[in-house]
Every structure is written in structure tokens, then in C-alpha cells.
Image 1 (spheres, protein in one colour):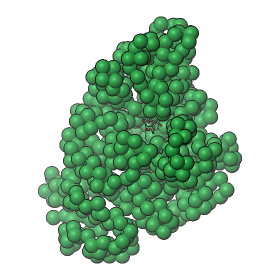
Image 2 (cartoon, protein in one colour):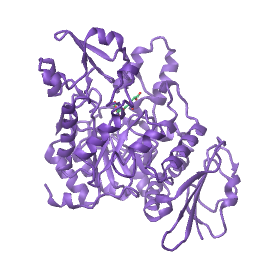
Image 3 (cartoon, helix red, strand yellow):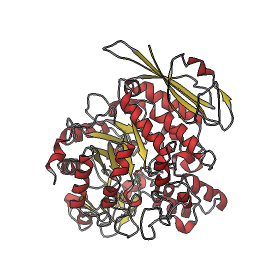
Image 4 (cartoon, protein in one colour):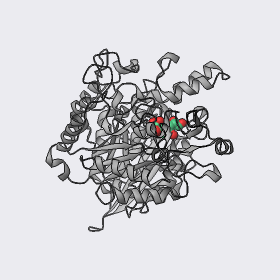
Amino acid sequence: MNPHILHTPAIDLDSCVIYQIYPMSFQDSNGDGMGDINGIRQRLGYLTQLGVDLLWLTPIYRSPKRDNGYDVADYHTIDPAFGTLAEMEQLISDAAARGIGIMMDIVANHTSIEHEWFVRALAGDPRYQAYYVFRDKAFVDAHPITSIFGGNGWQYVPQLDRYYLHNFDASQADLDWDNPAVRAEMAEVINFWLAKGIKGFRFDVIDMVSKEWSRLAMSNGPRLHDYIRELNQASFGGKGIITVGETWGADLAHMQHYSNPNGSEFSMVFNFEHLGLGRDKWSSHFDPLAFKRAMARHQTGLHGLGWNSLFLGNHDLPRAVSRFGDDRPEWREVSAKLWAMVIHLMQGTPFIYQGEELGMTNRHWQADELRDVEAINYRASQSELDPAELGRRLDAIGRDNARTPMQWDSGPRAGFSTAAPWIVLNDNHVAINAAEQRARPDSLFHCYRQLIALRKAHPVIRHGDVALLDEEDPERISYRRRWQDPITGARHTLLLLANLTERPLVMPHFDQVEKGATLLISNYPGEPAATFAPYQATGWLMTT
Ligand code: TEU
């Protein structure tokens, strides 16, 4: 392993931008239709040009991949479909040479039932049975749990005459974090990867590790923050590592605990409220007012008291431009730029999900094209639902939308592979692809580059406070950020104005653009006026 890895400087939380890679769908290097580690290595030049600091890889550990790697069979080995440990070390080293760190995904709430711990548990070893949540019939009857992927959350094991808990697929058995041996195992896994030069960790459904049976609550249990602080001290704490917890159940108070600037827990967490997925995500619709309220609450509530993650998409979510924006060809790019500007000029750490910087979209799915276990289970459970409505839901919300291969060029396999990919390509790669956008200076790709560079250049983006100016307006987003330089005393104000509609619209806060203001970024050419074009967005900087 390259010795300079461990000496690369720690990544700065205030300015860093994280890029999420879904390795199965990023770049295939060996012609088997599935992305791999060497494929990521081949694309480091692209990621360097984009300007990101850290690459979050969704799980690449050995796994039967019932849930595409979130069913880990061995935390210490790389799945052969992705490559070898030596190739992973080479990736860490190659990325470090470009000033880029690697963030691993820690799936700590559950393992695959093919994990050795579970296999030993099934074989009757009491030590490993205590790693999981095995219960008898009386307990199970008194504590009904529905799996997040549908169906009963308890799986009966005849040879033990007991049931094990699985909050996700039946092949993903929940670990028992109340067992200190389990917590020690997870700290050991993290330390193993730290020693390889890993610079960040994303913690899968970490808010579920402490359960509260009396309330039948699978998240936010009584020991949650104790366990996280313990893990922090036993592994990544105090080492300049960037960490993010996936916490669907976090309210502002929890977010403040998790991201406390004293560093005792995580750098930040993912809160999903702004997506508007609500209680029943399958029938949800995006609501701009709810988005703005959630963002404003988190921006002000964590300013100085914690830290925000900023994101529009990930591998579980619809494509950002399809969820938030307007993905029709005539508006797609300008609308995607608007949403990128809205997110990237806020305070926190932006996450870019692969292909978001190209404006990749959702697609229309045929039943036999679905690959995601959640979508397949959901479809099977909805025989009562009107098939047209079911199709609309899967097209709008299904996780496979985010998992179609990265669109590198307009060729037959989009530059992703030389073979048929494991999941269908989006046909629109002919028009939407990296080669075309890298060559065109006003593309979405270059807009993302510009936004990343602006964060590095302007302290007001990193440190400024945030005031939402039009809280009750569903058609616009206007916010102002302010920061005073403690040395020179200069006051910096950043103003973001965006028209969310497809009509020209007068922007009442345009009068706050002072004479001499600098137009930092815009998604239309030319000098903006008080009436904005459809989906027009501008970011201004004023210094006094
Ligand atoms: O996701 C947690 C989770 O509950 C949702 O994101 C999930 O995708 C589902 O859509 C909710 O309806 C994490 C991972 O990001 C996801 O890919 C895994 O499937 C899941 O945990 C289990 O590990």
C-alpha cells in the first residue's frame, strides 16, 4: 500500500463536497455488465475535474446482493464482483494522490443471513445467537413488526423454534446492539478500514440500532446516542474523519445531538424531510412549501449548533431533477441548475449523487425490468391497486430510477460497459451524457463545477447565517446569507433568488440586489432583471 495515504491532510468539513458512487452502476472495467473498483479508478480524472473531495461508495463488501450490498456477508472483504482488497487499496491510494478521500458505507444495523455470525447462530452457537434479535413465539405475538420492505418483520427458524427480527428483507437480520460484543465488532470493522486510509464513513440506518420494545419503536431508542458516542471513541473520533449518519427518524433536536460541534458523535446526518416522502412515500408528491420550511428550520437550527448535509438525491430516491424540478427536455437543464444552486449555496456539506451533475432522470419501468427488492415486493403486495397507478408510483418513486448506469457517452452502452448492464440503461443517454456536457461550457456539469468552486472561494457560503425571505411563497425561493470577516470587518451578503415556476415571474426580493453586486452564478445568459424567466435562478454577492 502506498505509504503517503495516511499522511494526506484531513478533509475540511466546512468546505468539502461529497460525491456518492453506486459502484454497481458507475463504471464497468471488466465487461461483465456490473460496475467495479477499477472502473472507479478509471474515472478519477472526471471526479477531479468536477472538484469533489470525498467519494462515498455504497457497500462493496462481500454480499449475496439481495439488497445490492446492504446485506453484508463479510465486512473485511471486497465482493468479487467489485474486485479485490488490493484493488481497493489501489483506489484509496490513487484517489489520495488527487487529494480525494474515500468514504465507506457501514451497514451496522443488520447483516446478511450469509454472514458467518448468522450462520453460526443458526448452527446453535449461543454466542452468535446473542448477536441478533432472536425471540420466542410469545414475544413475537406481543410485538408485531412490519418490515420496511413489506411483510412480517419476524422470520421463523424451525430448527431453533424461534424467530429473528428483520426490519428490511428477510435476508437482512437485525443485529442486537444492546449486546456489547456487537458494538465492539462494529468498532473493529471501522478501525480495519481506517487503517487502510479511509477518510469518511456513512452509517446506514444508524438511528435504528437502539430499539424500544415497550413502544414498538425501531428507531430513536433510549441508548442511541450513547452507542454512537461509544463507537466514536472506540474508532473514528478525533481523527479528522468525515461521518454522516442516515437517520430517517431524526428531528432537529436529534440532529443537534448527532452533529454537535464537540465531535462526540458524527459530522452530520441525513434528514429526509425536504424530499416530501412523508408517511406513505409511494403516494407522496413534492411540496415546495414543505421543502422550504424544512430547509429553513434545519439551516437556522443547526447554524453554530451542528452541521447540515445538503442533498437532493441518493441511491434510494428518485432522480433529483425528476422529483424537484422539470425533467422535460426543454426545461431539464435549466431546472436542474436551479435546484443545484438552491442546495449548493446553503450551509452544510453538499452530496452529489452520481449522474445528478448531468441531470439524469427517472424512466418508465416495465415490470420485468425492476431489480430492486423493495420495488419487487411492493409491486407484489399491491394487487388491489389500479395497475396504471402502480406503474406511476414505481416510475416516480422506485429506487431503480437512481440505479440505472452512469451515462458517460452516447454510445450503445453509454460508456458504462461493453456488455449488457445488470439493469437497463436510460435511453436518454443519447442526449444526456458526460462527454457532451464536459465539452459544452454552459452545461449542468460545469454549473456543478462552478458551485463547488464557489464554496471553496467564499466564506459566506461556508459560514454565513441563513434567512429565508419568502417562507409562504410556493412559487419562489429567496434566501439571504450573511457573514462578517472577523479580521477585516467586511460584511458579505449572498442572495439567492429562484423562480420555481415555468412562467415568467416578478421577483419581489430583486430590489435587495444592491448596486455593485456581483452576479456569482446564474442559469440564464445575460443580465437578470426583476422579472425572471421560467426556472431562472441567480446568486449574488455583496460586500460592504
Ligand atoms: O435505507 C434505509 C431506508 O429505510 C430507506 O432509504 C429505504 O431505501 C426505503 O426506500 C424506505 O422505504 C438504507 C439504504 O440506503 C438502503 O439502500 C438499504 O436498502 C436499507 O438501508 C437497508 O440497509
